[in-house]
Image (cartoon, rainbow, N blue to C red; front, side, top):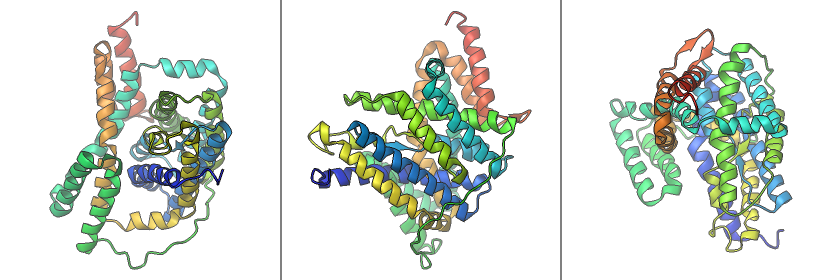
Length: 385
């Protein structure tokens, strides 16, 4: 395998990881800290998702000789960041364990997998958009307090999306970090590299956490990551057994959840980097790009404490804008899919608005109520659908 490895494989693997990390690491950190994790525990979260993604990526890519790239759910992290209020860290960890069990169950139960795929896309994408819209709105609120930083990052976003779409988030981090450093709000003098040690976090379970965290996280992970991920693989004329992928990622998710591994699933957008001609002209050798990506995942996991220290040192306005800009593309796509089906628009709109409202009733959070209300609305207007 080493004899076949080329620079294009390594560069494509590194690019895929950079896209994945720059687009979502700040959201994962927000989710972990929102759940009450300390900086050390946040480092464990990033360690867990990095190791889980790296091991599953390398294993499946070598097993099937296909570029299989796994990751964590960015929308899932956003869901946790917006929904963990009122839940303890132990309940959040317990919810992640239960989600892993649901994914494993989906892998072994054909009927459950079929049921998930039959949920109207308009409703699930409306729920996803409702979860993410508050992040999108907060992208622009720092304009009043930090106009120079905001305008610099907005310009970087527009230039990146126009000329370097694959590296937009990397450009945002560099520009935002540079401006914050010049303004004296980003101290880097004490930064140092250190190996991360995983931290075990005891889980607890409650009906409220399972209903409000586990089930929405499961649905978001399946609908926004695993299903698009398998479609991405198939669109490049590759084939892998979907149930086996669910079992493998679900099992690693289960093992790493007590250390902060909130999800492990197929990558969708970043996976395409390892499947194109840039990775290798020969489609049969492109799996080496994803193997390289798996190695970079593991390295990122091992040094995740340093990564957390860097992002914690950033001013809150900077991390707030990074999270928002990272999710704008997903929000746009989710809104398009939610409103694309004319017959389902009423239900999708109800789902979107209730989810975005952030309401909580009898201990159940807005995404669950939004999806339920949207489904009832959809059935009312389309009783034979």
